[in-house]
Amino acid sequence: MPLRLLDDEKATRPVMTDTLKTVSPVDGSVYVERSFAGEPNVAAALTAAVRAQEVWREVQIEERALICSKAVDTVTALKDQLATEITWQMGRPIRYAAGEIGGFEERARHMIAAAPDALRDIPADEIDGFTRFIRREALGVVFVIAPWNYPWLTSVNSVIPALMAGNAVILKHSTQTPLVAERYAEAFEAAGLPSGVFQCLHLSHAATERVIKAEEVDFVAFTGSVPGGDMVEAAAAGRFIGVGLELGGKDPAYVRADADLNFAVENLVDGAFFNSGQSCCGIERIYVHGDLFEPFVDGFQALVNDYILGDPTDPETTLGPMVRTSAADFVREQTAQAVKAGARALIDPAGFDADQPGTPYLAPQVLVDVDHTMAVMTEESFGPVVGIMAVDSDEQAIRLMNDSRFGLTASVWTADDKAALGIGNEVATGTWFQNRCDYLDPALAWTGVKDSGRGCTLSAVGYEHLTRPKSFHLRTRVS
Image (cartoon, rainbow, N blue to C red; front, side, top):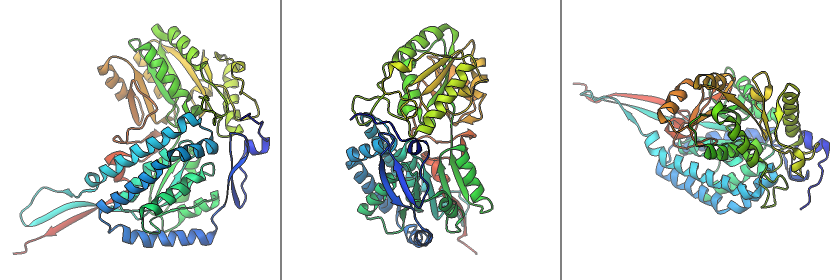
């Protein structure tokens, strides 16, 4: 289908009224329209969640697993439909959209399988006449606030483990991807989950804060921006509840002199530009040893020029629009500022026919001659731009990787396993990769440091944040 220039008002900011309107970045049309939940709906949902959780927490973990697995089955059976919905809601090319449902299934099934061991009682050393152990109890009601950029992958990190741990869940999804929340609700209903254990609400910002402040809520799992995390912390202040925050990133990669050049180029291009760079753990800055710098940049530039920017509903498209024009304009301005300060842009936007100023369609960009005085190397871009710098040592690379207020993931590209471990010990990050990037392994803790957030999802450790420890100290013989 031909691309249509977007109306500026629609493209630059969401419409905030009593009605939720999802403006598709594909063509500027209103793709979804829903009423926001009013106060009676919110109050009823909170009451229902509390009541339902009191019953759900007593359900055996095997039964919880069966119900959650049936819900996952329902979602995966709708993969093609859900992929189309992802594309129209947030703009990811249709050729890649179904992959998110595969990732959703991988994480969900792993966390379901991990639950029995993760939630098993923890015995203390035996003492004659006593039984002592620690039990992990459900927290109560978990409020999940999920973003649009990976709408299934980010939400499943909390939704499935929270339910498996015996909590009730209320899901508030981004106004850009409201259908995801509705599909969750349909899947859990089809699986036979008791009413009230999982609910979704379409909420305004004010109503979202109201739910965070509600005495019925026992934990908030938020994925989004740093300002959004500030709001969540402020709203939860004084409530003495747990808050999990998965926030932004400015994730670096370091290519050592001994790296497999072609492998590093191929994977780092994908890590930087997949999903139009709209990934918290996407590659946003690259440091390359001087011995490889020129061939790396040449190969990187050539591969980026192979992208096809255009209509994401076309299976040939490999780079879709950003979520809205204001996001694309932010990246345009950040890039322009870097060029004005001395950076050199290697990609000619004229080579991408769909690149249209005033729309979300933005060509990818690669910058060299960059440094850390430029925002493009220090502040989150969340778009299809990456800066590449030459370095002369591991020590310089470590210093530059750590020169950031973010710390979500970081990677090194090297054939030296010992060096990879040693450098990883020095880099402040939640996840450290060797010869890999932009991936979440559900068996490992997903966490960040500094302004990338706090708390943890996924892995057995993730269950610790969705439960509270309760100690049992039983004297079994009194004579």
